Image (cartoon, rainbow, N blue to C red; front, top):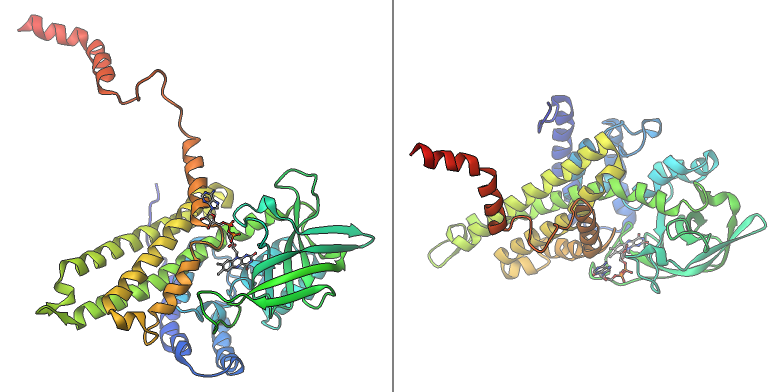
Length: 429
Ligand SMILES: Cc1cc2nc3c(=O)[nH]c(=O)nc-3n(C[C@H](O)[C@H](O)[C@H](O)COP(=O)(O)OP(=O)(O)OC[C@H]3O[C@@H](n4cnc5c(N)ncnc54)[C@H](O)[C@@H]3O)c2cc1C
């Protein structure tokens, strides 16, 4: 029997290196006052250091430079790098490029890899994933309405997308479109690579969001019109009708990474909460001595620990049984982790009072970003429905009118079961 919470020492030393590197080299980027070009100049040497440590884009298969780490190890790494918004960029794991590179690595042809994947991995180009539409519910992608029709040797794409993260700056987009309208709900859609300069592709705007105007490096979410966009037939990723299958492969492990990054963020907020509790005094004692504040600290610690163990367990299920076997676990952590992230940041803001509400601390920005976690990659409600359905499929309704645990019914059965023994006891006496 194995039931082990330890990390092997060799890998732990990699994590130690990451923690130190994040604190010393990456956190300072958060408060650097420069333009995008300045950031890129600051980031490149850091990316080189990550590559030298063989920690660059580790989510990829070994033939593309990944280390063959399973999801548990990747999760532990994402927890550290996710503590700063700059971590994933420095470690080559930035969404949506990371998910798109996985899609191309696993489902792309050699020609697609050469044209799009390798330059993406080299950081020479950027990508976007274009699925959600303003006119249909993204929660239920079987409703997608953007179409791609094969005419000659070209796909002709028409539709309206939005919240395509990176869309304005991407060099190519992977669009999820309906290619087979008559097929079953999960076989109608395909993924197609659309170069950003394809005629008919209109980048309308970056949608202003709660995250603010200053969103950079892929944090803008674009509205995109596809008007008679023509791309070569060969731009189909995988097989026709495999859109949902590929999306699942893309999103399963990606959700582990998200949840572990959220824990990295939550941990930073938690540290700030504890430090402020010890620093500030009100009503004759430190905030740390007020019971409500102690409750916040204890509740936050318990919730983060629960979310962490649940997420690492989901990662372990993927590693040992595959992503399909971890569907319930992945949905559990997606909505639970998003709530923990939100609640811990919220308490950290509260303990800082007006300072917490101000931009003099990173908490208000973390809070705005955290709100989106309850929506992207499937809203909370959809994941809860999925979890409940899977759990309920393991139950049967009890026969008859009473619940299975109905005490009078059980008592009657127990009396019958032990009747002989009870009678003997009376006779012996
Ligand atoms: C920051 C951010 C980045 C994103 N990046 C991308 C991207 O790169 N590419 C992309 O394609 N999309 C992206 N999205 C879009 C995201 O995937 C969708 O917002 C999400 O799938 C929900 O779809 P929707 O917005 O159309 O909401 P809808 O489907 O209209 O749902 C609205 C609400 O209805 C409720 N609801 C839905 N189903 C149920 C149910 N079964 N039971 C109860 N209530 C329910 C939920 O509360 C839900 O929030 C991004 C979104 C955000 C916020």
